[in-house]
Every structure is written in structure tokens, then in C-alpha cells.
Length: 108
Image (cartoon, rainbow, N blue to C red):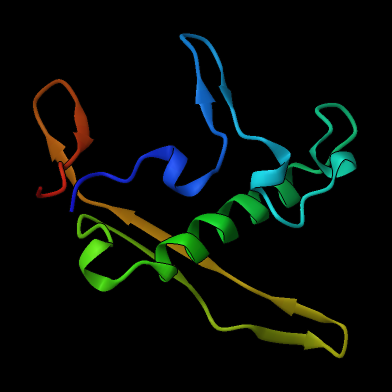
């Protein structure tokens, strides 16, 4: 499977030489207030990014999922009657040289 493009995960994603943009509409559940650069909640932004990425990968057929990256979501653990803990785990296979590391290319 070839590498997954950012637009396959985040509809409307764009990039320039200095910026990347993910439209708020591409992140279901994230509000304008939570995404605000000054007063928002970076934890919620990260949670929504992880969930969006995970759910998109999960929806792919096994043949279309990356093999040099794994992304798992742990089982929900109840903390109380109105609170849970959820975990995510991501691992990447990397190629190593004396001067750098980089992601291992996905087979075509």
C-alpha cells in the first residue's frame, strides 16, 4: 500500500512552504472555541486528531492499511459513572542511517 496522503485523512487539507491547514469541518467534534489558538484546549485538539486518524485507518480494508505503521486505540476504562480513560498507541517503522532516521516506505 502506498503512503496515505493527508487529504485521505483530513478533507480540505492544504499545505504551503510554511503552513499546513486542516479545516475545522474535517475534525468532527472539535468546536471553534476548542480550536482557538489562544483560549482553546490543545488536549481536545490532540484527542480529536487522534480519533479522526484512528477511525479513518480502521475504516480502510486491511489491504489498504499501512504495514509500517500501527495505530491502536485501547479499550475504554471506566473511572467513574461519568468519566472514562482512553488510550492510543502509534508506532512507526523507521529506516536508520548514521545521520538521520526516516519513515520506512510503504510497499506499492
